Image (cartoon, rainbow, N blue to C red; front, side, top):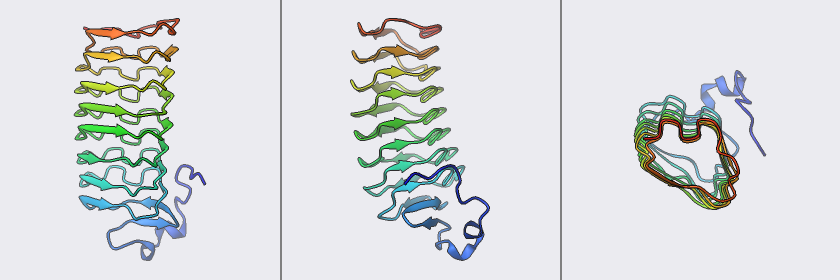
Length: 219
């Protein structure tokens, strides 16, 4: 089952404090609707999905431990969690929603698991201390603005499965000096690497067009 954006907002279930755990978290079945504000929080075993905005702007949170079996991290689930320093996404995760980790300014490293086939727009945008990204396996597209304004990003591994890098995906990644675009990549979006610090790049033969501003102000 797929849970849409805030499906239980303004319901009696959401508003009844008696439904919440002692730490403030709220579940319905195997969905986490509202996360805790505890600095370190372990999501319950058996949880399949984290709802949109579940932890949004919980600045005290430094580490969230996910159970194996988690399949989906919803839109804006951790956006604005400026204290978040550590996250390990389990191998079972197949989808990371739009803006899932937007503005998590203290994240330094992230690994996208092999089974993940959807990495949303702006998912790690404005993670200004992110240094290393390792994308494993099956991802076919890096969406627009996914890593925009990750000013300290130095290293990113783009898998061979990737056929498209979206608009402004790595815009203003000042510290990104080199990147290898996979040989299967056929499409770059406008401004894909605009403002990055690229000093060298390998372009695949399959890439027929280099779009507007793709490498603007790379120096």
